[in-house]
Image 1: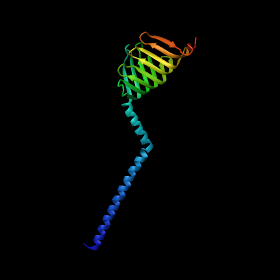
Image 2: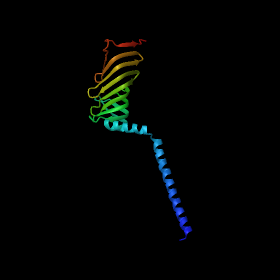
Image 3: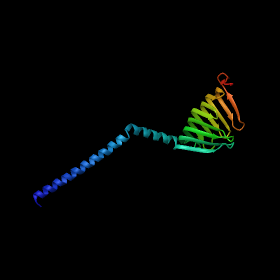
Image 4: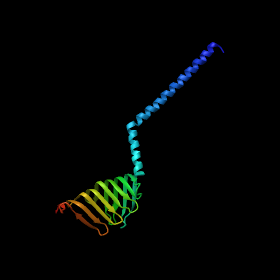
Length: 201
């Protein structure tokens, strides 16, 4: 093999190695940049923290829906954007962005919304908390808490209760509705009085 040919082979080999190294480092560096651009370190830390919190809470579910019948035979649907079960008590499901629809036998419908809630998948009892809103026929109800007991057939609405109706507006501390007896009790604890503006027309 001639000297010239040896030099040519060595030059080609060096160029090949250099080209491979340039390609390797170019694409290796791009992969790192893409990863850094897609998920920042701050976001990665938030994700890690959220995953650890979720592991403490239990299994997480999204866009869930429960449906069934209460003890009186009324149908209901309970929807939630996010839910997680309790590790301590598997019967309890904690829910967020809650919507419940109750279809009563007389053809009327009750809609309830709240920020948070709790559903017992054994007793079918429900709790609603945080900006509770309800619509029943022409009445609108606002409060901070509501509790529906399927097992005992009652609905309690409490904390800053306000009812708006075509007949007027009423404020109370607690409403207790006996579903079986179809009776409503209104309570006020502060001064023993219920505030009401009634339209007599």
